Figure 1 (spheres, rainbow, N blue to C red):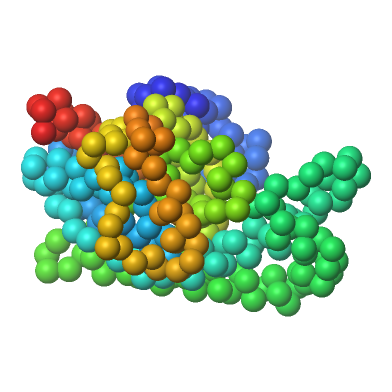
Figure 2 (figure 1 turned 90 degrees about the vertical axis):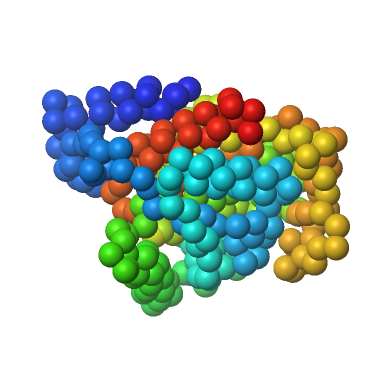
Length: 304
């Protein structure tokens, strides 16, 4: 956990150093010391795919839409190449991730909650359902293998599509920039019946997450096996970020998510986006996030 990327890099380089050699203590740890100078040649412009206001299922609130546009304009102003990246397989990936959350142990915690008469949050009701159905009825070796095959196919499809961006003499896309949540910061209790983790869970199936909560940068682990770092962009503004009009929701839940938006209530809450890299690219993701975040800050400092 750190307040800036420099501190996070220091932490990672120390823990993942040859001196510490965590891979000698943890057989699941990949034996790769922390790397530097991941963007080559140095100071080159980045190629970034940016996902728009929705992922095919859930639409972000207006302040985040403005943050996405602001980031794109700031990056293009200094010469980085930014193009639209369609989240074509995201709904399928999120569906499998949600299934995994429930089936791969989620139901197991219900035994503890019932032993201690602990109430179950609304968002955890599916866990309760599968627990009551019985663990053997929800997951067995055949079902587990089927889920793994589906996951691997989605990972391969996404990787192939990423590679296809390197055509016509151009390098392969460096990163994806997208929202990290529908909300800037959801009001207390709203997520228990209007639940959405699509913007982060898609990378859970595809990897590692390096997160930022408001101004705090956090290193956490998550299944595409991609590296992610979130970064602050701006704050919600009740004058600039009005409710959408003449807008049709993608589905019933999307409508409820958007109905929750209140410009006055969400005023001055943090707008945060994600920089997504590929598998085992944590170092590069931090370097790219630093470039993107600094570019946005410089753009805003000039009164844009």
